[in-house]
Image (cartoon, rainbow, N blue to C red; front, side, top):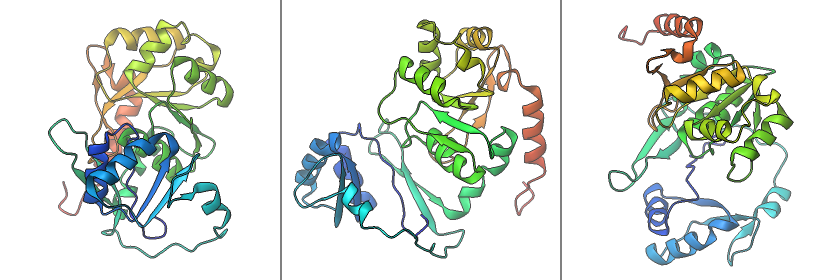
Amino acid sequence: MRIGAIAVPISPRLTAEELAFLMVDAGAKVFLIDDDFLPQYRRAVEINGRRPDLVVVRGGQLEGARKLDEVLAGAGAERYPVTTTSDDMAYWLYSSCTTGRPKGAIHMHGNLSTGDPFLEAFGFGPGQRVFSSSKLFFAYALGHVLIGGLRSASTIILYDGWPDGVAIARTVERYRPTIMVSVPAFYRSLLRDNLAGLPCFKAVRRYMSAGEPLPESIYSRWREATGVPIIEGIGATETIWLMIGRNAGVAPAGGDRETVSLLRSKASGRRGPAGD
């Protein structure tokens, strides 16, 4: 995005057929891929009969492709950003395939600042460490960890691979995030494996949940184990940022009335051109 290119993060769990469609639909010129995704990529090229102009592989080899390490070794240390406008495309996110073929949601450079009041309200900023159990091709993690962390000057903690409850606990123990972004399934897993009561989880200042409804039982047990409520919200591929909701039957936004009030005041103070 900094050089004027349009980024399209995709799930490495796509089928070859889905990948073949996305490569053509997005008009991909450059494709960066991990080696464990190579079988789907090879099959996708067979399906659509075309490949991007430049293919870069991390951790493996592919005929006609370059290794990521070699590309990075030959790259310059500095590159000036390209001047863009708020209406220029910055990145695309594709929806899931629940209603047919994936659909691309186009996000503009002007959209990148829309989450700033949200980040401020939830305490993102210098000195904060943000960690997510979700991967960065999800709108949830992309917005609140990568984009949100960079815009707010928070420290971003990344986990390479598909984590389970034990891996999350080890990461939290080692890197001590102050904000943790996760989904109900992982909170449930940590409670089931008696990991939620570890001192490292009690030290996290803010927990967020999205992706599926947060059961009242998980909310209550997590707060009892850690002393920190989970703030539940919903989001969408088209919005990136969460729309904070209620934890059914418990309390608004995970019980944090001060945060709810702050969000409302932020929203009321930032009206659009039409005043809505």
